[in-house]
Amino acid sequence: MIYDTCKKNGWQIDILINNAGFGGQGDFTRERSMEQDLSMIAVNIETPTRILKLFLPDMVKRGSGKVLNVSSTAAVMPGPLQAVYYTTKAYVTSWSNSLWRELKGTGVTVTTLMPGAMDTGFAKTGGLTDTKAFAHTVKPDKVAEDGYNGMMKGD
Image (cartoon, rainbow, N blue to C red):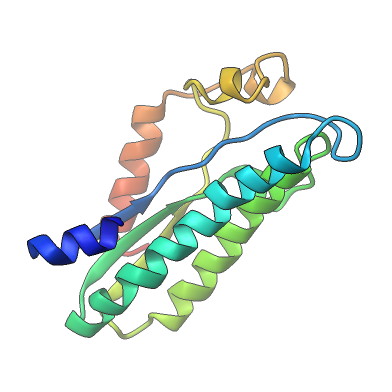
């Protein structure tokens, strides 16, 4: 486990970036399998939740730390044919906003990055290359820089 390895080696985590996630397309009832959707929930929701459940107490105890949770603009709208993906991103955004408030005054900040469509392998992997959302993508390096700078400021 990552947390155990860090503790064993005496590695202090000052910055934690939750950026794992994947999407997928298809009608929830007719095209998406239970396994596909549960795998997405495990990666997009369960994994960042478990990681912060382990690492946040140490950050709070020492009074410092920064977290960047990567969500998506998909978090704030319905997502027909991507219902589970959009919902997982809504979780990340709502959860991050809640943690941001809970951590006020602790010296630990949580920042939520909500990019739109980017020029990465995400669209191809998720079968989304022909969708309107990916017709005009942005370069991920600028998005990453903006997210990092926001996190460092505690935004």
